[in-house]
Amino acid sequence: MRFRGLLSLVSDSAPILLLVFCVVAVSLSWVQSRHDADTYLHALVSLDRYQPFYWGDNRFGMLIAALAIPVRDYAANLMFQTGLYTAALAGVAILFQTCFFQVDGGWSRGAAAACLSLAALLAVFRPEYYAPSVLFLGHPYAVSLLLVLAGVAIAYRSPLKPVLRWSLALLFLLLGFWVNASHAAVATVLFVSLPQGSNAARISWRERFLGLACVGAAAASVLLFARQYPSLKTVALAGPSLWLDTASRMSANVTSYFIHPWVFGGLLLLGAAALAARRERWIRQETVAFVLAAAATAAGMSSLEWLRASDFHPRYWLSPILILAFTACGLLMPLALRGLERATGSSSFAHSICGLILAAAVVQAFGLPSYSKAKDQMLSRALELERGLQELECTHIVGDYWSGWAAVFRRRALEGRKSNGPWALTLRAEATQPLWSAVPEASRRYCSLCGSAERDSYLRYFGLPPMKETRRQGQWCALAP
Image (cartoon, rainbow, N blue to C red; front, side, top):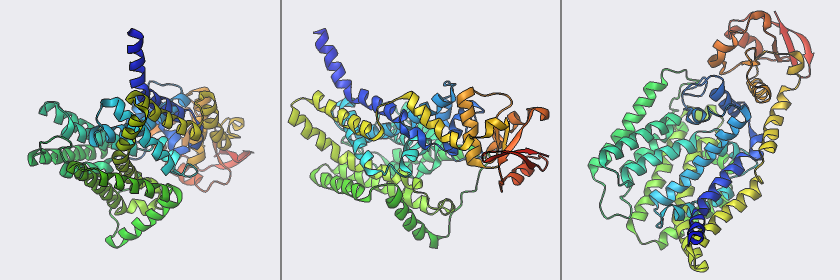
């Protein structure tokens, strides 16, 4: 009897255990070769000098970097952060299946449907371009979306007492907006338009106004807090005449470099067919609410000058894509799971199959997890940019953002942090200025990329004297006044 009970527990837990395996497999894979200065900085923020926001900018709250602080090895810290960002994506899939489209049968069944959703999502995104780095390597969208959806779910779908329920909802909204405030549009639309779900009772307008008040209070609190930190660029509205042009250019970039449009369109069509097969009124209302949330987020982002300044990077539409994809999966995967349960005659076996489908898709796309291989790939990318610096014994790297931070990270990962560096004197280096300026002048060895056009401007910016190139090693040159 004990053996059967243990076997039943393992079988019921299989989808969740396989989800954990998939998170580890992604984190310890070739994905680590996709890092650049923007993502190397996450480990430096976590271990060199933590600040609540990404260095030099107040739009991206460093929640994941804070959670990774106990991991003191720089390479392991960055891989751990990758795992948390990947887990957040899995968490969004689980929330859609268990709290919104409400798969009956508990967390095991919801996790099984989430496994199918994530397997479908892997087919949607293009691995050869931006998608792997945006999904797994230090972008705020999945983490913020998870926290905001959790806040809405607690407010509208939790059996907790009202005071505790709304207090927790406000806390999750605060955390979600701190990580990325753009999801205020998602929360606003959902608080206004979500139905009660499968329960008979309706959500009162008093509760809806309370939800909107929580959104306003959380957004205002984060805005006031963010003003204490520097902003890289003011976020402003573009002229209304540019909004449609921005949306058109974003659509072109998303379909060319981010997703497989035919796969994504096919998933949405299958979701629409599943919706037609569902007779519950609340399911239709739920679907409309999430489609509106996705549209509002995409439209809000398309109205900002920032997208034009960022060359219409497709990452700014990741949240609408995730919402639409997981909405389609929320309609489709419960039907697929029910069919699988009937075909196998065992719900536990069917749930295990769902987990195995995702595990097979992840292993096929990312390979088996290997810490040593992942670390080698992470550092080999930085090695290409750092080659020559060690021979020059550089302590202060002036100028180029991309090579400077990559070189700093690689030395940290191999040797740990040393008081004399290396340090990067470039964009976002204001956060570490108290550390690198404490190095005695006699111990400093300045370097830059040979012929760097940015070097002189950063020397002036940080109050250093003009310098000239003296000795060359590869692409790097030593500097002296």
